[in-house]
Length: 349
Ligand code: SF4
Image (tube, rainbow, N blue to C red; front, side, top):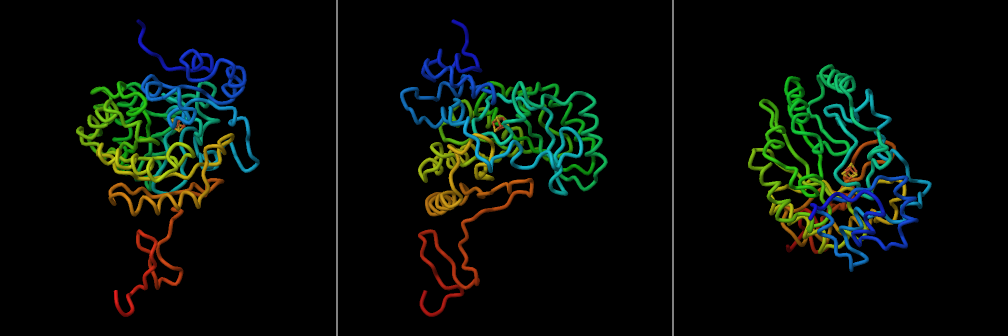
């Protein structure tokens, strides 16, 4: 029997029972616009009998994606506005994004860079592009942190990743290297000892931020892959996109945050869904997001609390979007049960 493969077309998805054969023609139109890939590890998690399966919602294309709203944009967080050289985004003074590749192990249906990633996307930085990107970082002493993203940088070979870390390690003012990836969850077998060794820097602190959106993604194999990274001395952070029908209930979000912490991953950001084209069916409102944050604040440990953030459309940066527990005049505070108390207390407490 041949080993399972990543599925990359509606036809292949139909062959695996993940979409109905009669839906293939319509989904080809989606696939012509936005790349499709779902790894064996994620296929194994999908319950094909559940029409609302939270794993399928993230990776299996839907015709809803053909509906683009006027407020949606191909560059919702303003990468191009802040790109001084190819492969670099310099939005905040002390850090840059370095995007060595626009390939990913999976293609998420809500991706905020969906018009840049995939086989038809912006591709890989060639040797000259990489030289220019490293030259830019070396020439800007205010850059303290380099966030290696994409695409998914962990699809690169250990040799390429090792070269990248070695080159960044030579730039003295860079103190922190952070990788953003879905690979440890969506393709845990790819996290080999060689790959983990390639991520380590002799001089800089390295972090790995894992993007996962549902507790089921943290399988025993994914947890083992993350353990390799953590036990190599690389702290891990959790990043999640708030998605309708995936993690927009207190139960689903709590379970995911706990799964992160059990895996020694500190939840970092809960991202409000970006205004990427054809993703409105997966977005919640900001007030729904705030209600969820309130619900998990009272429900799970402080270790399990991410910061809920919105990337302000147009490239104006990321900011926390609440909820707020302090009144505008600063004279009362809300407890996790929603009860408001005077601060400082007046009379009996
Ligand atoms: S792995 Fe990240 S960059 Fe790639 S499709 Fe998913 S969200 Fe987009």
